[in-house]
Amino acid sequence: MARTENRTAIEDYLKVIFGLGEWQDETVSNAAVAARLGVSTSSVSEMARKLADAGLVAHKRYGGMRLTDEGLGQALRMVRRHRLVETFLVTSLGYAWDEVHDDAEVLEHAVSSLMVERMDEQLGRPWRDPHGDPIPTAEGVLHQPTTEPLAASPIGERRFVARIDDDDPALLRWLADAGIDVDAEVVVRERRPFGGATLVDVTPRGGVDGPSRSSELGDQAVAALLVSIDPASPNPLNANGCHYADCRHISAARVSEKNR
Image 1 (spheres, helix red, strand yellow):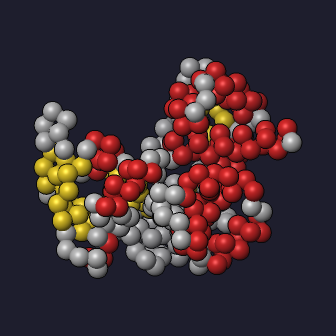
Image 2 (spheres, helix red, strand yellow):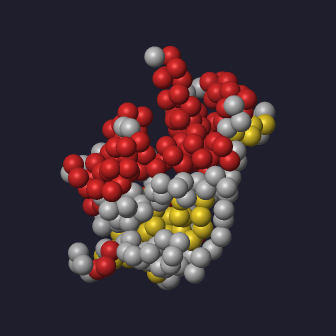
């Protein structure tokens, strides 16, 4: 049992370290890992030393940590499991997108590799989860679109929601009520000064659910949204399997290139 619990902890740490640095490509601080896992910074420091000794992270005291190629490979396997499970729960079992995270956290450690591949096949090889996070392929390659925070988007220019932070279920429900989902078109109309609301026009994906409507977003909602200049394509755009015109690949070999 102790070995299983230790392995589960290692997998959780690797997945969290990857997730915290996934979209920023930055060194991850011990404090950020502690906050995400709900543990003390001293616990994170102790685990960081163990992960470094195992060759899974490069860690400097007070300097945070980055995954090594070996750590990245293991993290991508766990990320694949988690995001496939989330997608399966929503698509096949009728979960709402704000309900899946906790159950996926448990199931990702319990399902076998065979079950993961069968879910992938049953779902038609999905390339992203319900929140827009890309699902690594069976070969361990993650297709990540080039994005920017909604807070950095120019006023008056259209953008498309590429990824929504799934940490807060209540926020996900609020965004859904506001019509903001993955692939929705958003146009920033105004940023009110002194920490005021951001006013946006929102058009649901494909425009099939109705015309655009205006919404006022607070700082938390704005911070949860990453947007792309071009919309995602439902079908791959090239032989590499990219669904965005501007896409980089993340893998244990640290391949990073743009494919057009």
